[in-house]
Image 1: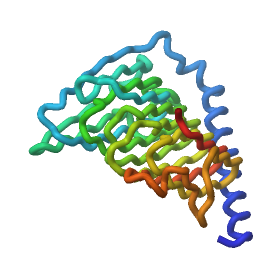
Image 2 (image 1 turned 180 degrees about the horizontal axis):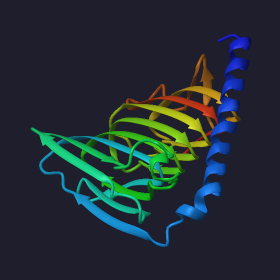
Image 3 (image 1 turned 120 degrees about the horizontal axis):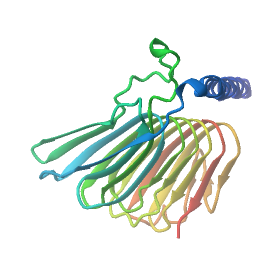
Image 4 (image 1 turned 180 degrees about the vertical axis):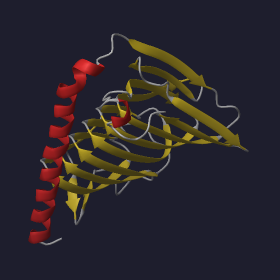
Length: 255
């Protein structure tokens, strides 16, 4: 990428961030008096493995705070808090042979602004706390719209990871004792990203950072890649493709 293309990309991302943050802020301030809920609903849901030996899980949400950790005895144990006007989350799980497919999503439409019901901003679920099974091999996909996310995935048995975030800060903890190699794809829109990587597994990161500062703690540069000390000698390798539009990127090594 030449200097002209890089500057153009930065201009586009900066303009996008100003527009998105401004639009969200103005909408919240302008319509919160009409849509502020008097109370919130709470919902808890557990999903058993049902004999699955591996699982592909997809988490999709619109406007919400998201927390994902391990520690569930079943496949999923979820706690959801949402406005009175919202629908419960949609949870679908099917097992085909020994392979399970889990989808956790908002029942609302994908639009942040629902003009059909009088500018009802905030109909989406406001808080998700999800625990996943530590033992089952898991290919995980996470897609978020607006809201911060904390993904402590260090105890999971990941076979692959894909994260797409819209607007909000993200903390992604991969500092686990990994036994097998896997690939990671992280696409961030607007917001800071903090990535915690393991000490003993080999990690190589390719970074595309639009507008924002980048901190790579304890990593060396090899061409377009950042690598940790264990990359050359470890049999277990994690390949990470990290792209952020607007926001700071910090990569640190876990203990």
